[in-house]
Length: 173
Image (tube, rainbow, N blue to C red; front, side, top):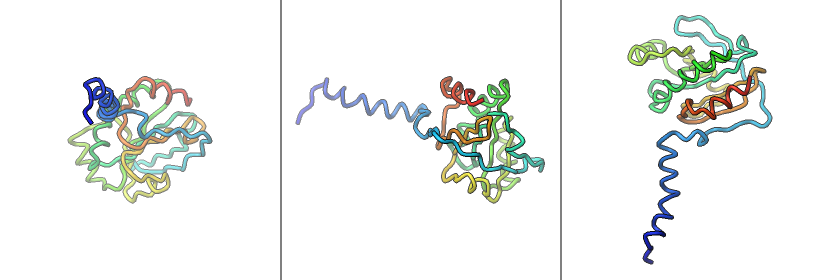
């Protein structure tokens, strides 16, 4: 069966849409909003200085929780966008927590020496919080609303700079 040029173009359009959507980090790929949000599991983890941070202490704020690891290339690629999201959220009383899963303090510090960040990095060395949050792949990011409920989960690398996504997250105040 021989296809005309017009037919070939029609076949190429959906393929190109998929390729460009993936290449430019289409936000909706791994995004799931919850119709009946449940209370967020507690997080009580140390930062790089050993100071403990609890999610419940942030009640009243929108909190974006990103589970990541230094060996995870998509995790590393999305860190700058998460920093920009943090800057936007902080102006309206929200924040971003970067939970490193399964790595030692020395591994995390070695990585951050090469790739500094302004994100609050929490250590989940035994992956207990990752387990509580049912993280099965990285990066996985959750949005917790001001009432302490998990309202959104995103699996995979995401362009957190997209205005529609930022507006949506800020709407959970």
